[in-house]
Structures are given as C-alpha cells and as structure tokens.
Length: 81
Image (cartoon, rainbow, N blue to C red; front, top):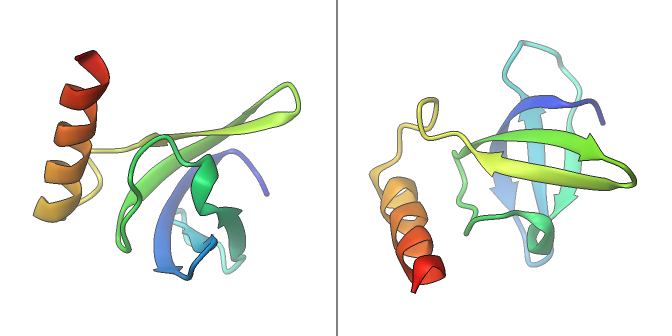
C-alpha cells in the first residue's frame, strides 16, 4: 500500500476495500478498526504511514456523502466531550 487518497469501495465485517482515486487499478484491504472515523462505503480517506503504523484521515472535501459527514461530525463532537 502507498500513502495517498483512497475511496472506500466495500466494507465487510473486519476489512474495507480501498481503491486509489488517482486512477491506479490497484486495490487494497484495510482493517476497519484502524480507521480514525466511522468509515462508510463511498468515503474518501487519506492514508499515510508513521513509523510502523498506518494512519487515516477522513477527507471531507472529496467525500460527497451526507451520512458520512454527519457520522464524522457526531464523532468529533463526542470526542471533545
């Protein structure tokens, strides 16, 4: 897996299938528990590596799903409390 922007294509119980949004044909699986937000199919996420751990960030600008925006907003509110 390379650092970059990925679209979440499908989610099963424990993994998400990611495809790069830059047009590459590669696909990767990523553990659902390692996402920093409640991931939903169709989300665009940024993935990068720090040391030995892969980190993710929800990309609000590229994701065009109202339900994903609502989930991310609620998670941020609950995390602050």
